[in-house]
Every structure is written in structure tokens, then in C-alpha cells.
Length: 223
Length: 386
Image (cartoon, rainbow over the protein chains, first blue to last red):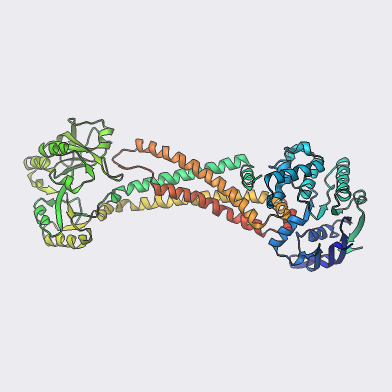
């Protein structure tokens, strides 16, 4: 099976006060369609940076990243934004829902960039919210939901466009044990039942166990 | 959900802040509208002038009189079709606070030269016939509840003594800019009394109003009139009626200019206020913009959201301000004595300027937060702690 994600000799360094700080060193990685990869490592190891590069929200200093045949390092900002809209679903540690929008409206947000009709959008949003088990909380605002429920809304927002890849940055990092377990079960279900390719960054070994593959990063090197 | 709904939700996220900003814009628009109305009211006399009228006055100052004998000489100048004259009578009606213009004029010719003062044929004939009659503008008639046949007693100051005039005509203004607050009566009536009481002042005329056939020849005709009286005891200065009206405003031009500048300064201040609000709003939403960019929203989308929010606030503020300006101007019109501002109305250009100012405020105040949102890298947006 061909790799859906190909990270080829990618290095990334940031410049702070004229000092170059290397974050990733010549990383190469392949992820195949339908895999659930967990990236582990201590703080500052570069796992979030690698996730950001794969999700197309940051650019490598050197190297290439090819997703489903598209070298995203060659895309300009505008093309990259369009590419992200149709290929990537992003789940954040702190949910990052828009507080003035209901759960329904938050999930609908990515669909505003599509040409779907109102009825089609409704169908997609309801389906996504039902998948995460929040069909009955559609019209609740984020502040009316628990942390776990907010994260489930964020997952529904990530999957509503049926993206190729789901990337999750510490999705259980801000949750209690029970809520974290629910989220991990949900991600596992999305991988197994809906065949989503998932990349998850975590430093929690219990969370990483849900993945089919675990890779470790340390000081910018994949080990 | 439509993008407009998101813009509205963002605009009213901090209700108190948005309300106060809208209130600030509304007050600024009201202040702008009132100041501009005062400025335009000040210039209404200039706007009401006619291109085919010249004013001949004493060369030193219009406060010095001209001889009545000049009239026939001016009339002989080629291109002149009619000549009338008047004097500033002033006097006190009821008390010194009741200010409106009172002129002694040539009853025979005045209304030929000023066709914008609309008088019925009957009224005009009666006025011409009766020496102690007067004609008043309809605004004065309304203000003092005067009607035909009423007597207006005037306590003279420049022309001392007690004077009584019978209202024989109430003129209507032909145009919006026509002053309907004047009182006109016979120069002959005043002059006859001067002959008895102050003979040295008899035969004095304040200024001549010269109606010409071709406005394009006003320069030549003015020169010809002034040449007639060169080296005389009372040399003249003839100029267009517009220039004459503007010379009245010259002494107050600094105040008017200051008011004009102030009206735009107010707009500038509120631009900074809304700009500050928008910068704060955009700063608070840095992470949200990063999320939206991650989802696939482009810079154009974010620019639209920010500008839309700014425009909603400025348009609502502008609309509230403008809708309150009209009744306020109406109220002020009732309070301000008619004699000060014969026409005190909000001009269409003021409405257009206020609306354009509100729109400009909306657009310009969003530029800085838009630039910030566009330049922001997604990963930096997620690191931002507001």
C-alpha cells in the first residue's frame, strides 16, 4: 500500500534573536492510509512541530512533505489553505471552539468554505455531531458543555468535511481521565470504523496505546 | 450559517463595548452634523446671492453712506437693467434680543431686483402706496404671530425715535436658501423724517443693488460704475453680490474655519476609538483566527470578517447618529433666533458626508487588525496568550 504521508528529510529550525534553534533534524517518515500513528516524546522534542508541518500550517526549513501525491511544501499560502480545507481535520488540545457559535455552528464552520447547499450542510453537520454522540447538544454553546463534550464538538468539526487525514495535538491533554478515555475511544472508532488516517501527538503512554503505531521523537530526531 | 451571521455575532460579542463604541460614533456623527449645519447656515446668505446682481457701496466701508443722487448715474451705465437701494435701519422690536434684519428700501424697485421674495400683486401695490407700510418675511410673521394690518413699533437707534410700520405684505421665500426673516419698509418714509430731524443725514443711502443684464459682464460694469465716482467725496466699490456677502463673513471666517476643522477632528477622534476597539477585538481573537486559518479560511476571509464587523459597528453608529441629528437640528432651529440663521437645515451634502465618514471610519479602523491577522502565522497564533 503506498504511503499517504511521506516526510522526506525534513528539518525545521526557528530563528530567535538571530539564533537558529533546530527543532527537527532530517526527519523521514511514512504513514499509510488507515493507520493510526501516535507521536510521542518529551516537551520540546518537536512532535507538535512535525504535526504542524504535516498538517500544512507550518513550512519546513528543508525537505519535502508529500501528502497523497501532493508536495505541500511547494504550495503557496492560498493554495495551502484550500488544501487544508479539503484534506486535513485538526483537533487541538484546548478545543479552540468559537464561543459565540453553537456546537452546530462550530461544526458548520469548515463547510462555509464549500459549495454545499444548506440542506447538505445540515446533513453533514448532524451526521458529524451524531458520530461524536452530541446529536442532542447541537444548539448548546461551548460554555454550556463539559471539556470532554467541547473536544467532541472539535472532533466533529474536524471530520465534517470528511478529510483525508485527522491530526490531533494532545487531544486528551486538557481532559480528566474519563473524558480522555471517551475521546480516545472516539478516535479509535474513527480510525477503525470510518477508516480515517490519524496522527496523534501525545506524551501520555495510555493515550498512545490506542494507536496502531507509535513513533518517538527526542530532541528533534525520530527514534 | 451565513458569513454575515458570524460577522454580527463577532460584532456583538462584547455587548457593552460595542454599545459604547456605537454610542461614540453616533455622538460624533451628531456633532459633525450640527457643526456642518451651523457652517452651511452661516454661508446661506452667500448661497442665496444672484449672479446678475452687483452691490455698490462706499469704497472705505459699507457703514459709510452714499448719496441718493448716485442712483440715476448708475442706471445710465450700459448693461444695467435696474437699480435699487437700501439702508441698514436696525432699531429694537419688543426688546434687544429680538434680532432680525430691518432695511429701509426703495419700495418701487426692491421686489423687481429681488424676485425671490414672493409677494402677491395686491400686497405689493398696497406696500408701494402706503409710506408707513412694511413687508416682512413669513418666518418673522410666524415667529411673532403677525398678520396683515398689524402695527410693528420699532424703537430707533441708528435712526432715533419711535417708528411704527403697518404690515402690508408677508413675502414667501422662492428658494430654500432665501432669507424669510427680513423686514422691509420705505426709505422715503425714513428720509422724510430725517429731513426734519437730522437734515445732514437726509438723502443717504446704505448701498445700491444693481441688476445687470449679463452676469458675464459684471467685472466691466463694476469698473464703469466705480469710475463714475472716482475722486468724488464718496468713491464707490462695486462687486458681485456674492463677494459682498462673503465680505460680511470675512470677520468670522476664522471661527467658521475652526468649526469646519473641528467637525473633521471629531471624525478623526472616533476613527481612533473604533480603531482601538477593533485592534482589541482582533487581538483577543488571535487564536480564533489561527483556528480559522487552520480550517482553511484564507486571508481574504479574515479580512472580510474583520472589516465586516467594523462596518457593522460604524454603520449602526452612523445610522443612529444621523437619525438623531434630524430632530436635533429641528429642535435647534426652534431655539436659535431666526435672525441669526434664517435657514437652519441639515443639507443633503452633510448627510452624505456624515454617511461617508461613518463608512470610512469602518473601513480605516479595520485596516490595522486586518494587516495583523494577515501577517500572523498560524503557529504563532496558537502560541499567542492574550
